[in-house]
Length: 358
Image (cartoon, rainbow, N blue to C red; front, side, top):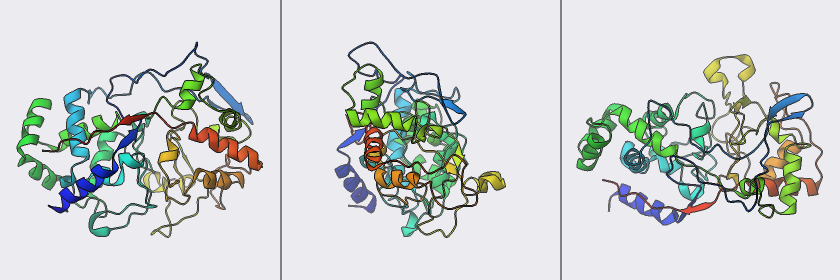
């Protein structure tokens, strides 16, 4: 058995159920027992007005340059799990974005080519279709652009784009699929478009929260309901985690302690070179966060409770700390209620089938 086969076998053994995964042209309907009462409009806290939280849109954002259809999504799924996109043949997209762990990496920071240790925690693929920028620092403007980055990163997949194309062109199954899907031979643009089409279908939805706001009042328990009120009020979470995907898609310095292999990580500053962006990182979605530990750009916190404690004290010490981060003075009971609400954002579980890779 090759190294790639062994790794696939290990990964397949883990992938029993993946939450929120499906292939849709439209999102599945949220279950409800009565007329909808979903939050809408805006919320104003301390003079700051932000979009309210609520259910996801009924369709998945798809660029006109990469229309989605079943054959393309299935091809992308195969490529997503194919270790041959890496130099060693053992590291696929799923190696760091594993369906068994919320399409994220349970390690604090990811391990890549020849054991190289990355400086950041691999974020979840869940609902990246709703992000207008990708990566913790927002350096990619689309999923298509994001897909290609790790392939040629020396401490991630360690390959070159040219060699990946050459390898896949020798595989009969991919030859046939690229001709059928794109009408071309295997090429880099097709690889990016297919994987991006698959990733756009990795959706966390129909959570207890979604069902609750659709009218199923028993979908969340009393603690979670109290936590939702804290989320949009005293705890101030909604200032950054707003809208249907629970993110403003912006970048903030929270004073997160820098852990892992990097002594310093300036985040968004590396992209913009703007002084105010030093140490700022993208606001992640909170959907299905109970599956995607650890948390923050460097995996500094292991549990949702750790994160709530961090925010409750007013974040960390940093000269560029966001003005949105302030001490919350939550009681022990309030912190527990807030965590209960965060856990109620976990999407429904759908059985996962490992793809047949050519």
